[in-house]
Amino acid sequence: MVILSPVVEVVLPIFMVIALGYGVGIRRWIGESSVQGLSIYVFNIAVPLLLFKSMSVVTLPEMLPWRGVMGYFGCAIGLLISIFFVARFWLRDNATAGIFAFCSSYGNFIPLGIPLVLMAFGDEATVPLFILVAFQAPLFFPIMILIQERARAGEHRDPTQWPVLKSVISNQFLLGIGLGAVINISGVTLPLVLVKSLDLIGQSAGPAALFTVGAALSFYPIRGVLRSVAIIVVVKNVLLPLLVWQVARSLGLPPLWQAVMVVMAALPVGINSYLFAERYQCAQPLAGSAAVISTGVSLVTLSVVLALVKV
Image (cartoon, rainbow, N blue to C red; front, side, top):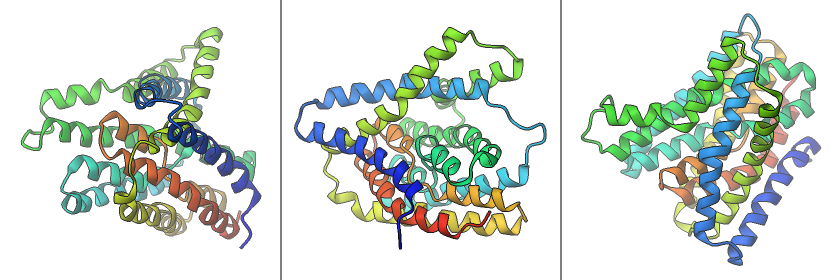
């Protein structure tokens, strides 16, 4: 099978940035504390501001195609929750089970999904593409944050207790999403200087996150997580797109919607999986290795998907 050029053009640059980070880390040109500092910048500053800016300017159609939205995220979030409850018994740790489940269901939408879909289907795919992008973080992040904060607080505590809720509400990802939504709904226009500043910071989020993953992997042993990573890759790269494809067909969605949904479902593990792992100091080798290996496998799986979907 020939690897399709749109996949190569989008995926290989991502690999090169990760490889650069790994090379710098393995040579110890950058210390572990510096990698952690870069991760803090990405998680606490760059990504929240990227989410704020994206939510403040996103334009949704007057009538949302709820069947498509509910079809895709019903599959993805249903998979997240199901795998979490299975993995917590297997892994004996709720925090690690949360990372495992998040990796298995959360795709690399922004740095990989957007350019790949636009290259494959053109501007006609803009509406389904950006609707899925706009909903992914607001729907996934609260679940992941609640799982991790609950695990941090201790399993004997009720998840509705104030300390856990306070940590969830004050999370910088959700603050960025919420404040951006408020600006969008209120119709406030951000000053041009602020928008350009946010664009610069947002542009740094993806490359910095990829570099951080590569550098961090050079400090962590990964042999012990390869079996778990293999399961994640099968679920994320193969099972989720098959599930979304079946649901999209059963809902009778337009061919373009079906194609975009399946391609987005087939995207490799999202880089935010590693950022969550680093933020909560849990399962970093698992999340980082899953993101890298899943991305490599996606050269094949995404090519198969793009060859099969019909628009």
